[in-house]
Image (cartoon, rainbow, N blue to C red; front, side):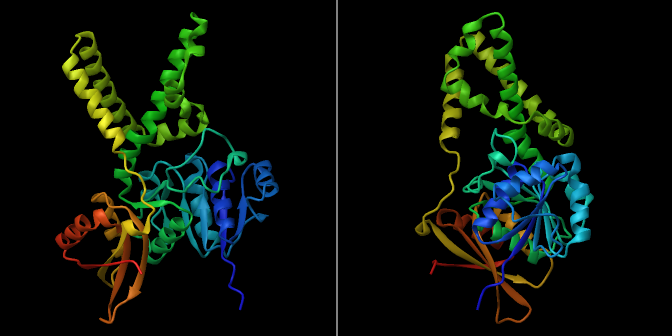
Length: 355
């Protein structure tokens, strides 16, 4: 018996939308796509990123991958036109999460990208090992959240669930301000090169690595800086303060404090978390959950709070009637920390070796 083909819809066939489409097609999904710019959709079709141009009212999932200013309109349209779940890919989450309180809407943000523009730069492997943040609201349906977490995991993403406001504050530090910093460094070098032509010829690996993201599409960042203005300004203020402190240390020839700062930075950089992939590094945590709305979101947010990565997730039925068992696959080294946090929230949890 032939398995039923699963269906998805992509709204916005640019770099991210095209990459999602390609990743889903690699899993055998039928993907419909549309874009306000007809040429973009046509190009996606010619590249094989999508199967057909248009709307799929029966799509299980709709991914809205459009500029920030258009996200709310397109999410509402998808919720009105389709029967499936809807998610977006915008990098600012508080505003859209607050604006749309619908059980079928699951706000999201894939922390992946490229300096390339448009569907021509799309890559089905762009999400492999990349963090994909979900920020469900109190209205989000548990079943949809679980299905999306599983689907994103199947294309290689490291799915993290957290509060929308917290997401915006964190990405300001690790994504938005780094881009603005790279742009500032690139502009400084470019301006200096007007007076000293060889400068850019001296730009070696370190400078090129640091400023690579400055080659991204400026229009996207205009929207991001407006949508996440408060968090970005706060992070810029902190960066300015730290640069001021660094300036004083260098100007004062304070070798001791300079060494401490550089050593701290080196240690932190070397300890950036890497996604585990070996089965022997993983273990199942099985949590008994009541039949109440929001339990999956609550527990996966707790995992994020504890800095515990969830590699896979599923729900099984319990023999205890009105309860279920949430099964989360996590790093063996992080499992005890997670169990302690779960106990503190009065959840009964056990561990089991992977089969």
